[in-house]
Image 1 (cartoon, rainbow, N blue to C red):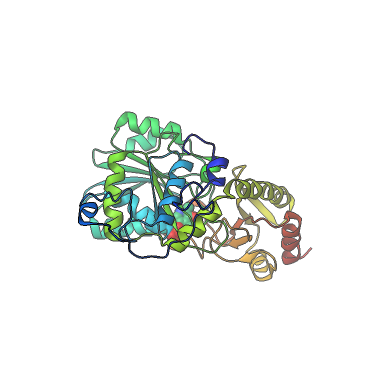
Image 2 (tube, helix red, strand yellow):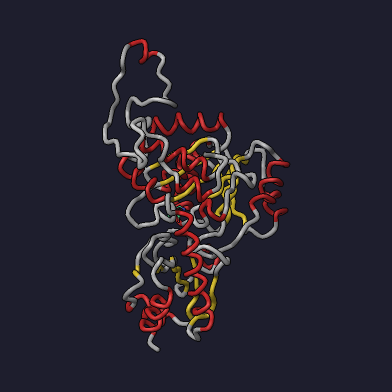
Length: 372
Ligand SMILES: *Cc1c(COP(=O)(O)O)cnc(C)c1O
């Protein structure tokens, strides 16, 4: 499947896998699997067969293989949340190691970095995403990971992954460049093809796309690293259960059409927002379903959030249903105040996850909420 394009890999997710030749992969609920003999048990290969659900299940394995193919990687891991995938990605760090991240990331990342600093003794630096020389200047002999998110959340900074990965690896080929690809998905961006070493996702967002599950994905391309991750993964047990693996695999089948329609709808919303006199500024990278925008007054922020009827005032993103959030008080509340101020995460910044409703209905909802 690796040689096929994203649409094809997604559409075929789980097909040609089942030993009973089912086209839609059935759901396996069993927590354990039988051995035929001692001889078979001794020769058992945990990368092929099944023994116990923490190690592998048919549904999770099909999902992991599909994700590895979609992200052009060697091996995929499906976890119980995006944060669990981020934890797995950073499980290779040891006390004294150093990580440099972009300064604008999912809020939970900073909370986890702070934990790793205080409990494990890992050191962190941030880069504003502007000049590559500034990033390279921060690299020390202890630097093990460069952590990126593009477009960034919520200020929509875009990075040139290929340029960054090339320059970082030229300086030290051992440094892992890790990219959170939640916003663009492999439909718009395949970081491993651009030179990154590891890609992570909150599968809760576009990959699942229906606001009905919590999950995370990690894909890497180096075999030795994959083995290290596998060891940690089966030991700590943050694995995705069979039911959510089945549901996620099913959702992936429509990933490409969903993401492209999210873009069309978001572009229509941007066109409207840019000419509404109550909107100060719109941040949109040109594709994808995520829009951030500033309203001119906090009164209008309250009015909008209190009165939307179709758009749902809720955290999360990437689903069929349009959602609006206020990062300052919600997703990014744990980012230090000074940093929120520096990044422009203010109480007037809203983040809209444009769903698959008719965009004119969404525009009309914003108009009625703000008052015409
Ligand atoms: C939501 C999100 C996460 C965290 O994922 P969970 O599934 O909520 O644990 C990480 N990165 C990005 C970009 C996200 O949007």
